[in-house]
Length: 174
Image 1 (cartoon, rainbow, N blue to C red):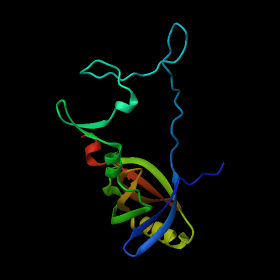
Image 2: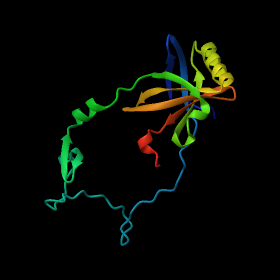
Image 3: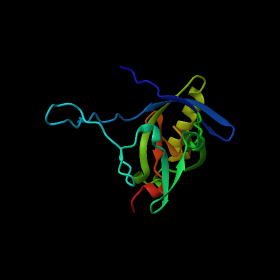
Image 4: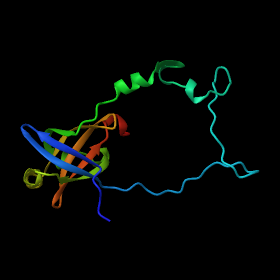
């Protein structure tokens, strides 16, 4: 079965724009998942949220999301406020610099995506891949998707390119 593109985006730097298709480079593991059941009758159990202060069950309509900024002190957000804070998704991976490949420690590697040229992008895609391969460099940049900003590295592999999502320094244990 042929791989399906999960997104289309444009890789850009300076005045250069390269339309590409994005393919997931990995597959999620197919781990067995278990459900909690009532031992007596075998039916599934449902989760119940209990208010710590009032010790009563809370229905979904009475729940809000909040951020704890100090011990037991929260700021609450409405769904509209949360939506407004989301990073706007773009169909653009903006390259900000080119660095030697060995300058990026693999400990920062997160998800990987194969890139393939989209309509009208074959020649500039091949030129970028060739230039990165010959110079032993990679491109660093940023990409916004699914409400979040990512740091990405575009590096050459065999005849193509991989866009590697990178972890932020605070996400890596020292």
